[in-house]
Length: 445
Image 1 (cartoon, rainbow, N blue to C red):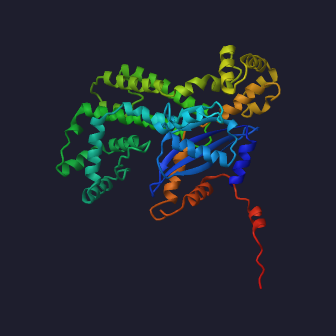
Image 2 (cartoon, one colour):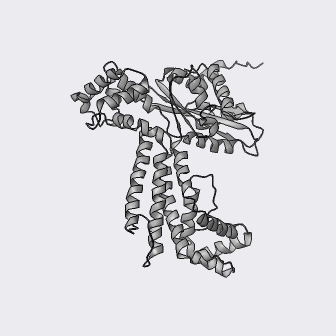
Image 3 (cartoon, rainbow, N blue to C red):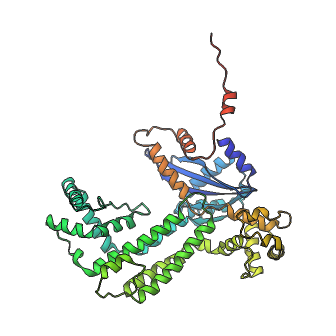
């Protein structure tokens, strides 16, 4: 399987890498490296390149030395590297001694794009909405019910008696992307049952009767639910960076829409708040400020993707008339290191090609583009196609790793762990015929 991967690295046009690090059950730091390759027919493959164990420190220099040593050992064609996606940790993104900075100083690496995982950045955006006065109370109530076995059994019995569709409360886990939204949604759906149960056990939480606090709870539940929807859109395998950029851009437009509705006290997009308000009035100003803060955070982040957005949009629809040819040519030329004037001519030739224009909606449009006539445009199309947008595959890999190397198999060696993970998630099939040929025939006596 590793031989097949190495062969694909040799024949692909471009590839990008994603890096993430996690600690296994035996306290060994495992550096996961995933690769996305694009081939001449515009097909892609996303595979595990290697899981590299780190026995000592995990600084940027350590990561760089480890990866460089591995890349040299397999003769990796680094000149085809188009981009590197990381989890945004200082060891990865540090300006001076971070892994990315050291790679860019190394002449054996080409000029490549580097950026922080879109999903990680989306998850960080909500951190600006602290709402600790809400979350602290919610978590305290949930823990008071679920921490004690007797309390927990009585609460579940109450839900069964009233035939509630929800069978229990959900515990909050800060590290899980979707946890906060799910916890708040379940808490709100069981709010009346929670009040009844707390009253029966003589537990008093004044916030549950405070209309202002309840509105904050409803707002946080609504906004985290919307962020969870975006998060799920960004997850998945074989995601094109254009889809991810489009999802983020769409969400920013929605934030502006929601803010305009909130200013007029319209809660059509905030169902939990609408239920909480009923006939009473509320002050929308604090919530408008929160949405504005979230929008500013989205504008602040994703800067690397803003740079390539015009190029991505052009490659998705090259026949748009709303582009400045020279500006677009300059952006494309900087990505593939060619002369701007050459790209300008190719753009004009492409936009005025009647045959290609008739095939603009074809999913395999760039397969129809002549490599000899449009070398620069086709090359940048290959390169953008190879970009990872997130470290989602690394996160999936770590979930698999925690299942394979558990407390029951904690002595699994690093080499065996890599083999198990590769077998578990790879799309390659073992070459059984080759294995059979290499086996020595044992004659019976």
